Length: 135
Length: 135
Length: 135
Length: 135
Image (cartoon, rainbow over all chains, first blue to last red; front, side, top):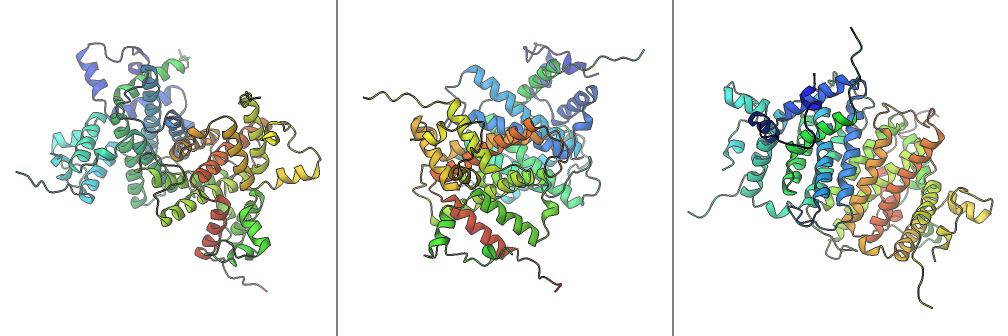
């Protein structure tokens, strides 16, 4: 169990196999949630995964994410002058925040994909787009 | 443009239509990323979406999420004694963190689904599951 | 009890009285810590002031502080173009972070003034100033 | 210049000298602010100390502070079962948050001691203490 994760090829990120590529490109919040649950179960880590523990762990990762940007002044979209290794590091820190966030939602019994979809709808109602004026 | 979001039914969260249910239940990071991009474009908000602006906006939402938990002491998994309205509020704050995180990754040119999948694999290598002892 | 705080003049911030001016200009971490302790005691709020409650409350205030800066792009030192009311709001959010931080340290039994002084010394050893080259 | 900091005795935290003890026990926000300014000047670090850089650096330290508490579940006041080295680590992380907060306020032209004193007064007005009922 969980072999999908542990048995993957860390360096590859896509191996030409159709189905797997789709998984990586379009992975759902639910799939990530399931993988995280398996991951915790296999290591007997569920006992540590209380809501406030996970929240503080997420805050810790937000801190690490902020450290990447802290001395840089304004940063251009697309990070044009960043080293590839710095982008990879950034991807890891963004992921750490995401994974704790998904796990926190799951442990709280919140369906995050559902909640986010609803929030987008609510935002669209709150901030209606401006009318299109030109033909 | 963006009608998928604005035209939805805020309160429903699933309307029995097969395809839509699947979207809500299994929404991918990519789909959310696309919706956020449309949302920003329609409102001419792209000019505000620099990496550090989005990061600070996300930190703001992490703060709102923390406020929900701040005076509660330890909180049990599944939030057994919470009012439905408090759970809904929690879902919204979790979503706000998620949406800014996805948008931040996108603006930085990071494929968050890909990065998270790789990070899970890396974590599985770093923390191998214990051997199964039975039999 | 606590009259020093509650009996002050909110709008004044300095009333020409020598001793009071000194207090406001050079207030120590210890004095703020004592005031916060009195404040909590008088309201029977000590029961809420556990370490992790205070930490999460502080994270909440860090979020509010970040919201002030979130859509501004880079901000110049001294905030040259800010409205007076925005600066006042900033002062309040900075204060909220400070007050929870001091209270957190106190509840943990940490002397924050002592710890900060030691940390400055440690930093000075870790990052020695460059040699002075002239003469 | 800055000799008080760099020339101090890292391990001592109080050397029996009356005046110095008072400084350590009752150090003011202003004194810490001045020390931080000297520290930055001596190292030519002022160019890095923009408001948003300092804010993100502070968020980074809040993350490190949260990491100390993340897997601990609820923590009792006074940290009764903590190792001395863990308390020292905690003191350092609390200090790091404090020092960036003070520096951020200073760079923004905000008198933090003044702002915090006013905020305490404002809080006392907002949350009046309950009447004392017994004789």
